[in-house]
Length: 287
Image 1 (tube, one colour):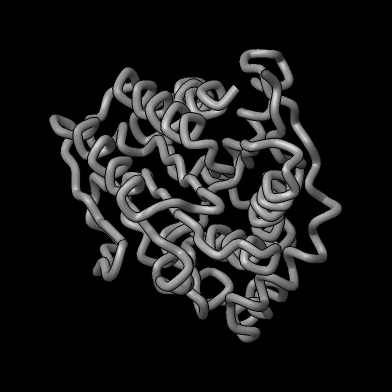
Image 2 (cartoon, helix red, strand yellow):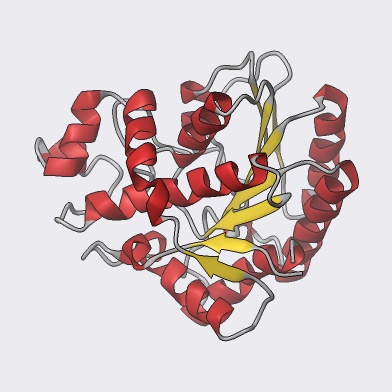
């Protein structure tokens, strides 16, 4: 079954070349070539609304810095060199998630995805860890504005999602996080959970996380941050494929509306072609 994957060329619009700013274009090409059954959709019509939402969760001073490149230290606080193409790029990565949320909450489909990354470490007033604007927090605000009362952020990036937790309301947004790296560690409260996994017990921790989701649900929407960087911690491609199947089957069995982002995945131990293959595991699991 084909479904919507949001992407446009602005996702790769910065001059700064890094996995986070380039891989979405390579993945889009693979989808266009028919390697998985999904339809690329341009989210551009949601850009103005997303820009408003970004300003609702980030401080004006930080947003202005990213847009204008001044002050430069703040515009580059995520770790990228600023250029004139960066603002539209990072807005586009959030726009795809807003488009996906709008689609699934309208009842048009149950699942949508965006070739977005560089999200969950960003704070309200600065970037961090290659993340400029926190598209997960933006998407949660979009969903709240559309009437959702309870949202799950399921974060399976290798790194902890402390930025997202710092920018969302625990009374309406539950965060369950399985990480293999302690970067951006955060303190769970209420129904939240942060599970630290190794390559040996990784799938067990994923099962534990999904069981916890059931215990603290139900949810009106799931935002899934589907990082492939656990590979850098020794989690195999086969295990990541099983993980994606588990999440897709779990969400389908419970009929959860779900929007995913690609999140982390790097060429430090992989070629770009191999990294694309990993991210296609996510796209393919939900088809």
